[in-house]
Length: 128
Image (cartoon, rainbow, N blue to C red; front, side):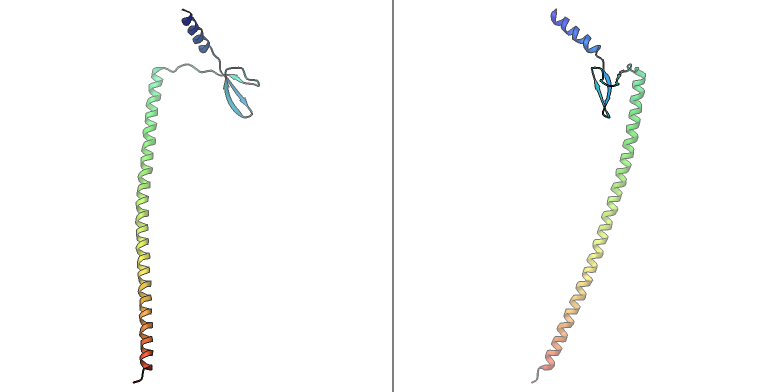
C-alpha cells in the first residue's frame, strides 16, 4: 500500500511539474525552476487530434517522397556526369598516348638519321 501511495505521489508531482523557458546570455534554456531574469512559463500545448496526426503523417510521407525523388534525380545526374568525365579522361589519355607515340617516333627518326650521318662520315674517312 505504501508503494502505491509513493508511486501515486511521484506521478502527480511529475504531472504537475512546470517548465520555464529562459534566455541567458543569448542562450535558450528550459528548466523546472523560475528563471532568474525574465523567463516565461513554457506551455506544452494540447495534444492534437487523430485526424490532425494522420494529416501530418500523410504530409510527411508526401514530403519524404518528394525529397527522395529529388535526391534520386540528383544522383542520376551525378552518375551521368561521372560517366561523361570518365569518357573525357579516356579521350584525353588516348590523345596524350598518341602524342607520346609521335614524339617517340620523331626521336627514333632523329636517332636513325644521326647514326646514318655518323656512319657516312666514318666511311668517307676510311681509305684502303
